[in-house]
Length: 85
Image (cartoon, rainbow, N blue to C red):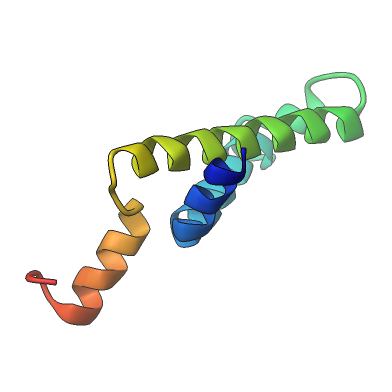
């Protein structure tokens, strides 16, 4: 698990953006609105939060095994330093 957390830390911008989009898609009233479709909204929110976080950690670990940066980090690097960086 420590390696997975380190991998997420190295791809923190991508992780943050992934989680933000996931929250919007899963919980916003104009999208899936899963928070209001099941019993207790607090428990539903907690389950969704843990699931989204675990998905983020697993995706970061997969990118780490391939020795790839996150997509947001790649885009930021290209915008900052140009296509050859």
